[in-house]
Image 1: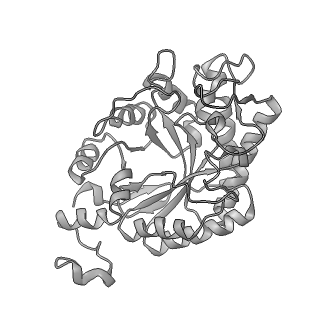
Image 2: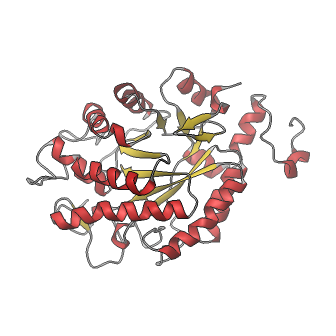
Image 3: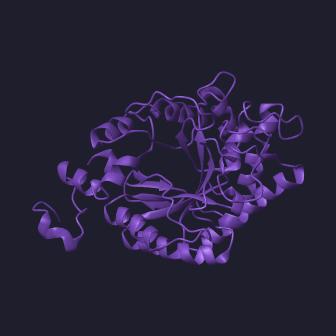
Length: 341
């Protein structure tokens, strides 16, 4: 069997294969941050289509932490109740489900009185200038992540991903380009990783022994920012708190990125080697053969297919059929697939 279709275990969570649907914002929630029938259908279909792990899009831990007014939230119990239907749909489809918890920081476009960041630096000339978080406000960030994780557990999620990538709040604290503080949360790499450690510690306490992992941007594409070595050091600083790392790049600054098939794989490979943790790799990976090379050469442990699963929710079924892997055709659809069991 192809390694892509082999099971994988994350802290006791058994995935049926190495195919991941990564978190991608859909902008289909209302101002209340509630999941809708769209989300049930969207995520449930990818599970029915054969993905082993579905990660729900970035979900705000506070109102000002959403990227837009049309993103999901998890700061109240009504939101948790709505997300329970999404988790149930994914489980019925035969996949495991995680939720990405995030705070947008200076990149929030929500209609809120203020947006927040480690330092009062706007993302670009068209963006709002964020308020610099006080130490007391910083401490409340960890509490908000922990409360959202507790609600995720109550809603039936199997795992939590803490979003510290793509230029959002936790990434902003990690990068010297956006964190100009001179207090205990800035000035040195040791201080810049402090909030991330506090968030992960609080989430781990609330979430218990379930799988918990981290999404990172391993390169800021700008001099003086995060590079692979710095991110490897950050990951090692919190290694005991997480079970896996989901490795991406960019998003901190409005700068061009030269992307191509597999362009982020070397970053995942280095984080894996430096930390000893399993990793998810992502970035214009579109074929089973490409994923198989990555897995067989030990460059990553799981492979995320973002755009491919948007284009075709049933891509895993077709890939399994093409490579002679049985057991992926749902019985109601069997008449459409001559080769199946």
